[in-house]
Length: 92
Image 1: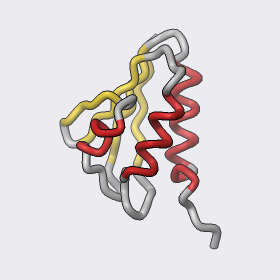
Image 2: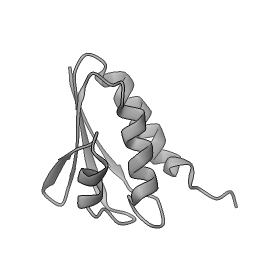
Image 3: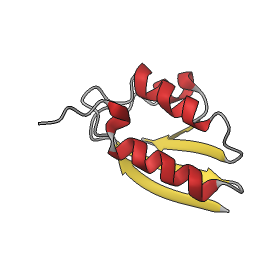
């Protein structure tokens, strides 16, 4: 099953090392192929260096593509992580 969703980077510093590490750890056991596309650049979301190469800043639009048997669960997990700013959100 292939699922495609768009998200916006909400983190103040964009997708830097910490969020990239969180993403890769989340996807360690995922069976689906997961790719991020930003500014016409598509990368493997299971690679920290690939995610960092996107240089996605705050408010960047990212298209997430999950393709595989666990795609719905993987997409749900990623959407929640982006929404929660990978645990970096500061309560106000």
